[in-house]
Structures are given as C-alpha cells and as structure tokens.
Amino acid sequence: MISPTEEDFELELRALPGVMNVGFRYGEKGDVDAVSLVVHSDDAGPVRVVAKQIVSLYYPNATVSVEEMQPAPENARAGTVSDAGRVALVRAEFNSHEGYCEVHLNINGRVGVGRSQNGPLIGGAEATLDALRQLDFDIPFYLVGSVNVATVRGWPVIVTLRPRANEADRHGVAQAESELVASAKATLNALNRHLSQLENFA
Image (cartoon, rainbow, N blue to C red; front, side, top):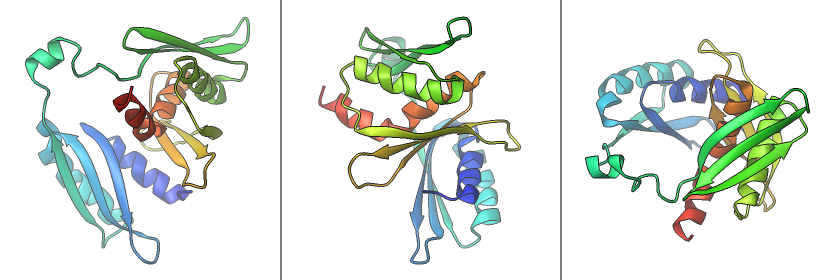
C-alpha cells in the first residue's frame, strides 16, 4: 500500500489542471525516483513547471516526465467515437429516506444500476462495483476502504481495491460535488486499467 505521504503527493499532482494520469517508478530503497504525467497538450507547459516544483518538495532526486495527450479530432468529439466502449458514470444518488446509495453506469447504451445499504463513502464504491457486475464485467477485486482526505485542495476521496489474486492493491482518487459521486468516480479510477482491458476485448 502507498504511504500517507505518497497519497498526498499523488493527490497534489492529480489536482493540477489537465492531468489525466500519474505514474511512479521506485528506486531500490522504495522511494519514488521517477514521476510521469499524462497531460492535455494545452496544459503541458505550465503543468511541467508546477509538477517539478511539487516533486522536488517530496522527492528532490526524482525525475519528472510529461507526456502530452493530443486533442481528439473534431469528428470524434462530435460523435461518440472517443466514448464508445467506455464505462461512464451517469448518476449517483443517496436516498436518505430509504437509506441506500444508487449508482447508474452506462456503456454503449446499456445501463447498470448498483445499490448499497451503506453510507455515501463506502456505499458509493460498493454500488459502483455492483453496477459494473450488472453490466457483466468480471471484477476480481474487493473493497478495502473508501476514505476522504483533507488536503489544501479540498476533500478528495481515495478508494482502495484488493485483487483476489496475489497482486498489488489498486487505488483510485477523485474529487466531486459530493462524497458519493467522488467515491463512485474514484472506484472507476482505481479500475481504469482493468476495465480498459475488458472493454478492448468486448
């Protein structure tokens, strides 16, 4: 599992404008010795400068690389080419009267609805996993925790999923208008790589 210091470090980088993804490489002593970011091309210049400043505060000897993500062609953005085959969060709601969370996901016009009897933080993650299974995704992970973390930028939610196989935990980070929505988004964030592999073979 990543340390609290590394969680704060990752959150600071992910909160920068235009950052799509953050990756780390570790040295022999377990410290981060390289950081890579995927950034929208319009934001790459300013983000590169700020990211180097942030990294130097946490890991002074680490290198920083920024990969620019080029904008999608107009026809792809106008249509559904770029969104085809991708799981999208449609809605996440907490029914205070009935006491359950409900998450709606969509992929290629199919909607999966998941529910949980727990509160917004845990329930958002549980309902998202339930909705993915309703969409017939094989999700070989179980929920370890969903917590919000106080940072200078607000209260992001971190979701931790543990594979049933002997692999490293998956972590997702998101910030949204509510704990429930942030928890749902963080769960999808934690499963990005797994879902993209399944979607490619769908």
